[in-house]
Length: 266
Image 1 (spheres, rainbow, N blue to C red):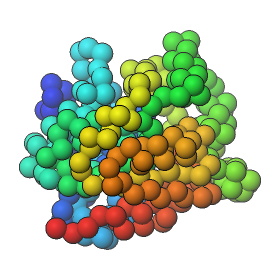
Image 2 (image 1 turned 90 degrees about the horizontal axis):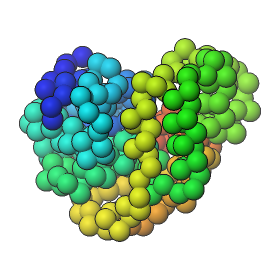
Image 3 (image 1 turned 180 degrees about the vertical axis):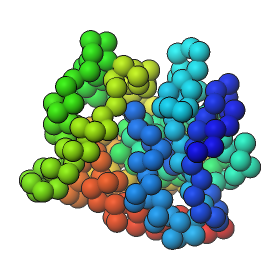
Image 4 (image 1 turned 120 degrees about the vertical axis):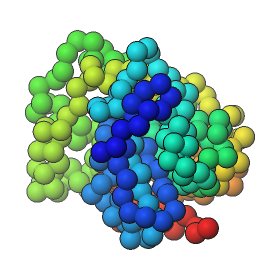
């Protein structure tokens, strides 16, 4: 796993395959390896070089000496693209990663050829604000028991289709219990979800974009994701049924087809 000096921190990333580069930015508390099982193989098979990023504060990437902002995280991605000489490249962002990518498109559009925003919102509505406040309170008070945290993760992030499949659900619960993030370690990222209304700013995005929403998503509910697609000039929208917030893992073939179908060579 290479680590490079970028934007005043040490930023870690992984590099797969060859071809035109695709940079993939994850959501809150998630390491870059979440893309490795499904999206990396699909993009490599389509002829792309895939760069997955560990966001600021996700080891081994540094958090930095001070509190950081969305602008800092967008600058981190920009710095990596420039460090690797990868511009103009394609960029994919999921959840908080989608918000980071949108800010990258506004600040440094010359670095990006095309972008896909997955389960991403352009504003924090009342439910997102309530969820974020609860997550911050948890981070300040201590971690949940792993089994309870796994159950809560499943209810919040999986679709009824997965929750009602007992064998698949057992596997998901086991994964959640073993890989749960320490809320205290990612507290700075939790607060970044409380964005104001960025939809008017998104109307200035000139990079070709496609937006993907998940029909059963309780975190980035589809109407919020559709708002993003409607705000970005010329953006397309795909909504995938039978999956929740973790749709990239629940319905990877449909997600991968939407990504590669939008990307064009050259």
